[in-house]
Structure formats: C-alpha cells, structure tokens
Image 1: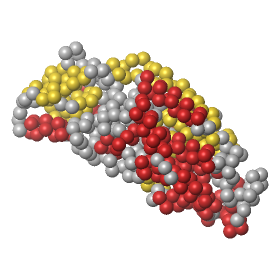
Image 2: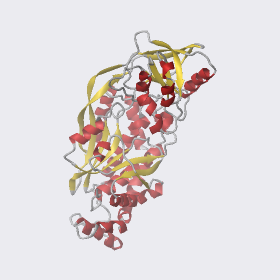
Image 3: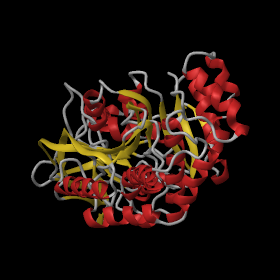
Image 4: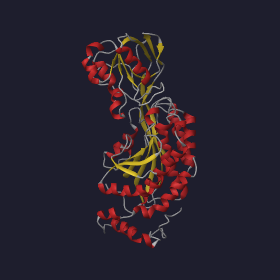
Length: 472
C-alpha cells in the first residue's frame, strides 16, 4: 500500500511537510472537536491532497483503459433492458472483472425488476400517401389489438390544446408534436401523454420524440398509466415525421395511420445491484458511494446511458487500488439496476443499506462527455469543503461545483439526509442519442471518458480520506 505522501507515520498520520502542518493539524483538531466547524472554511484541503489528486489524474489520462472496458461491455452484451438475459449476463461479467481487479466485497444485491418486452411493432401512414414511419413503443405501453389500430390523426402542440379540442379526439390517434425545450418540461408528454389522450377518448397516442436533434431516430423511454383511466397504446415517432404530419393537418389534409404493437408486461424478474469496494483503513463503516445504472433501454448499446457512468466510477475506484491509495473511509462503486424501467434499483439499495453510514453519494447519468464538475446538495459547510476539493480538478477544467445536484438512483439515499453529487458534463449532444439505436460507443470520446474517470477519482478519494468527515 502506498501511503498518502503527506503522511510519514501510518499510525499517527503526522504531516511530513512542514508547510502543511498548520492546515492538516487544524483538520485533525476539528475532527477531535477542538476547533469550531467554521475553521473548515479557511482550511486548505486542496493543498494537502494536491499530490494524490495529480497522481490520480495522471493515471486516468495515461491511457484509454476505461473506454476499452466500456467497449468490451457494450459490444459483448449490447443493450441491457430490465428483465433481460443480456442485463444479467453483463452483471455476471462485471462481477468477474471486479474480482480480477482485486476489489473488495464484490457482490450483487438481488432486486426484483419490471420485465416489459417490446415485441414486433410498426407504424404506417395510409393517407394522404403510403409511408412507413420509424417508431418506438414507449416502455410499459400495452399492445394494440390484433391487426392494429387504423385511425385518423389529431395533431396537438400541448396538453392545453388537446383539452380545448377534446371533442375532435374521440377514436383518433392523438399526436403530441411538442418541440424540445428542456428535458424536464418536454418529457411530460412521454410520461403523461397516454393518460391525457385516453381521457379525451383517443384510441392511441404518439409523441414527437423528446430530443432537440434528429436524423430520423425515434426515442423510447418510460411512460405511465393512471388508475381509473383507460389504457391505450403509446409510442414515439421522429421529429421529422411529427412536423410533417403537423404540416399536413395545417393544410387540411386527412391523415390516417395504422399502428401495430405487440408489447407485453411479464411478471417481475430477478436482477441485481452490482458493487465492489475498497474498504476504509480507519473508518470502514463510513461509505462514499459512486456509480450509475447498468441497465439500458432495448435499443442501441446503452453506452452513453449509462454504462459509461458505471465504468467511469468503477475505473476511478480501480485506480485508487492500483496506486495504493487506500482511503480512511470505504469507497463503493455501484451499478444500479432497472433505473430506466421503474427505477427499483436505487430505492432497494437505500433499503438494504439503510443501516450503513453513507457520507456522500455520487451519480453519473448524463453521459461521459467532457466533465465540468458537480452539482451538490448538502449543508453549507459541506458545500465549502467540496468546492475546495473541486479546485484540484481545475487543471482539467472539471472543478466547477454548483448548488443542487443528485440523481435518480441516489435520490432515495439523499432523502435520508445523505449529501449528494450529480456529475456535470457538457450535455450538448446527450439528448441527441438518448434512448435511441444511436446510443453506441462511437458517440463517446476516449479522452473525455478518461477525464470523467479522473473527476470521479479525485472527488471520491479526497472525501473518503480527509481526517474530518463531510458534515451533513
């Protein structure tokens, strides 16, 4: 084991360099309750960990190992939808690789997950001219009747417009042609569109894919039904075709579509949250958890969303192991299961590990593009500490720490008071490929993936090794 270069004695952990004696001693006294917490604000944590941070950054940027491992994962197993054989085979492979890396406590915690199967599906425009329309059924949708649904189309631009024109929707296929503004606003038509259309009497509903950019690529994703509201099939078409159908309607042309979907929801299936650790040298029961979700939708490779997040966190922990940087606290990497389809992985992790003392939870689920820093949710004192740690990442442009951050899988932990960090990257292209057949390895840059590894490694290691724990 290589010791932190600022410590000469592994038992007493007295600072080796006199230039750092005052700040390190102050942190030790703070940890012993001899200094007020406010002293942390003047404490140069970054100075104490600069050498270790630079070692981690240099090691991460020295090769493209993370990108190569990511490529092996997605090429071997492809997409990994909840309940699929491919997902469980990928988890088996990850556990084998983590064991080979020499990580501690490699395991898979069992989680029961939804098992939705797409089946064969198609969408044909029959009027005003024949044309096959690229489409994807939305996750959780029911099937059409045998033979499909042939109906006239009503195109609307909002829920409000549908409500105003509800008398025109009876028996029709409602198309929500809603341009992308931001994900939170636009995704409501994917999740709630079938409910609104059914209430208006529609036979089925389709949406313009939730994306700012398209090359005839439909986007899938989860959708919802409501108790007491008739369930109707729900699918997505491309931006180009949604705009075309809208133009046809505006010209007064009659539009008819034939929608066929054979989707079915099978009984819940067993899956696993996959994880491994470096056990802390002094406070093994205090845990820093970092990761992403290992499942994906049943299109593309799920390389960007979110195998890349899992592999970047995994490689960050592996680098600590390789460099002999064993922190005081336990660092745990997790690949949560079934985030896309119902999200049971995160809540089940929080339930099964509720007895543990989580110091910080970190999540990447926005693609492993050029890292910018983190969004942080926690106390003012903790924010100041992680902001200072962030300066260690300034050399790679990833040191920006902003207020407000988290993620779907760490959300259940954060609701118990655990501070949370959401990985922040240049998301310019993320929603171009999100939930599509185009989410493949080539959309990622090997150098940017390595930068993500470095960003994860530095923050997780310093928080795990500081003499004083991150305050709540």
